[in-house]
Image (cartoon, rainbow, N blue to C red):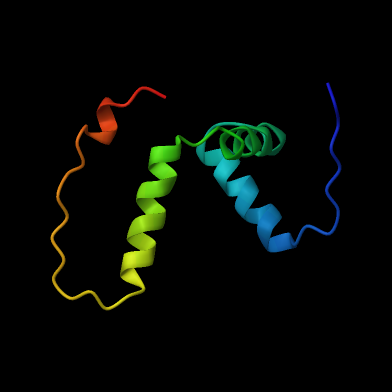
Length: 79
């Protein structure tokens, strides 16, 4: 196993990590490992694109836009 040292972590962040770890009944070290593992999970491309498209639309003035479902449904696509 590799070891990672993180320097200059604020006291506030450490306190929040400790509280989160307690809430999950884990040590702070185990909580940090869980956070890193979750952050590195691959994201399905359709999920990324869905959020990007809605973010772009939200930044424009398109008025009342009606979104029709795509065919085939994104949920039916195997990745």
